[in-house]
Length: 111
Length: 118
Image (tube, each protein chain N blue to C red):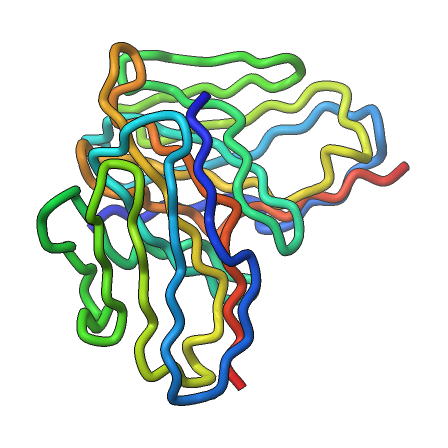
C-alpha cells in the first residue's frame, strides 16, 4: 500500500527566504505526483503536477522536482511571501486510482 | 477550464438524518469521480471511486451502505451520507478525472463540503 510522508510537518520562516518542502513515497510505481496548497477551511488548489516521466515542473516562484526511483519529491518556494502561508500537500497517483496524500506541511511566512 | 463544483458548501444536520452532496464537472466530462474525506488537522483520505454508469468502488473500512455514491452522468456524482452520526462530521471533497490529450488522469478538485452532524 502506498504511503506518502511529508517533512517537515510545520515550518515558520521570515518573509523573503527560499524554502524546500519534502515529500517521499514508498511505491515508485506512480503515474504522477501533484503538489497542492490548502488554505484553512478551504478546498485544494493545484500547484504543480509532475508526470512520472518528468523530472521537474516550474510555475512562477515554485519549482517541484521528482526522483521516482528514490521515491522523493521536493517543492521549492523562492522569495517567500506572507500570502504563501498555507498547508502544502503532496499526493501521488497510481494509474486510474485515486490520489494518496501526505499529511501536509503547515507553512507560516512571517511578515 | 476543468472546474468542479460541490453543493452545498456547508450543511448542518441532525443525527439520524441523511444528507446528499453533489459534485459536478462544469466544463468537461468526467469519466471517473473520487470522493475524499478530511478530518480536522488530517490529510485527505480516499473514500471511493465512481465510474459513470457503474457501481462505486469503496476503500477498505468505508461502509458502502452508509455512504451511497451515484454517478448517473458524465458530469454529476452524488454522495449520500445515510443515518448520519456526529462522527461523520468532516470535510468531504470530490474530484473529477478526464482523459484527454495531455491531461490523462489529472484530477480536478471541488471546493469541498463541510458536514456537521449534531
